[in-house]
Length: 540
Image 1 (cartoon, helix red, strand yellow):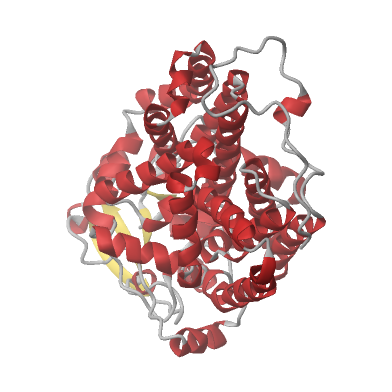
Image 2 (tube, rainbow, N blue to C red):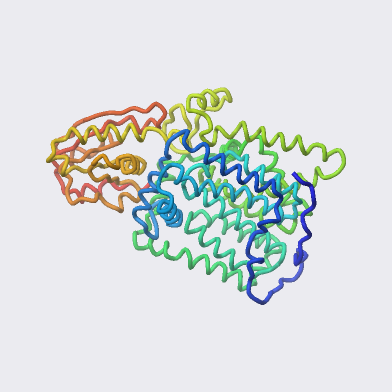
């Protein structure tokens, strides 16, 4: 990594200068990150990050949420029970161009991860970091296990990471230049971020706290701040309209998830999960970055970023949010920590510690990477996990098998589809023609749609999340094949005359609740299908 100082920045107003109101239109130079200003090592790290993801995609199978997202992409809308529409639109576009193979599905999140690495270096540059600091920030970002995990499969979370680091860069530029015109593009990015994941509201809350708590409060008098907020609200408005039209299903989903699904962590447990998921070896770097944003004179201009992180952390602890929800805020600490480390090792004997620091980060990344992405074959991974003394943990109230949930949710789908296909094939032709498959959750329904192509399966439906809104797809269900639902489920006997266990299936690495219930065939409906459908709604 080169240690040349970064090019001097122009037009950066002193932190306490009066608010300027620049006139004129914003140019591309004002808006675009400095594409060619970062050192080559940043590009190498970002490209290597993408390549690592693409080379390891075939080790395990497709992830539960990816199966659901593909089903959502068949039903484009302005919203879904558990997420806004942007990630689904992007998946629809990506699938239209590249298809829906595992490699094609994961191309976009892999690229988002590479851009995350690159943008973290760009953020470090904006904080005043030299070329070594920029390379160091990219290296740290590339070795964070949570970043690797969230960009290793298709979901809104990979895009969310990129949204947060881009918005943090905009805030840093505004803090450094005083140019309030930049609130307008900030509003565009924030609005698109909200269309991807509603948790961007946490970022907005942290920003408000940071503006009030720092000299940047002068921007509260700027019309352009509110214009940027208006742009974000306008972009987000179609999803709000969808929520209203559908009775605010996401609020019901969040409430049910908190009550029945998520593990409520005590504050110290939440902080412990942060250390584990973000990499225990990197904990000193997070603390250094956070401390520097609040106390280092050289970063006083950017203190608003420290308040953003601290506010989001506090909100998530109070609301018992999942630990990984905070991951999107960590590039702020990565960039700040890298800047401080680079300055602290820039002269004399301390400069000789730089190779040691780089080696430490590479070793930490190599140790933690197999826990985040499927680098190792599954049996070797289990042995590796045991050698590290780590037991699988869950962020949900579910029993675990030998794998952590983010890996276990990639297994069992083919076996389940084979079992259901055998049950369907054994039905008399007249029953097969009027059959309906109903699953317990969206992963099972998505898997049957994905792996069942070409197998002449009946329509597949579920009462879980957005599948419930799409309905059963048929007017009657004389024969219903249940997947993932116990034959002794409460109320089932009130709906069907006959309940017959037809088959079972096993997958040693899947989540245990996916294989504990057999495939069940129900006949003789006692009530209309529409009434039975309404009884089983599950927004969770």
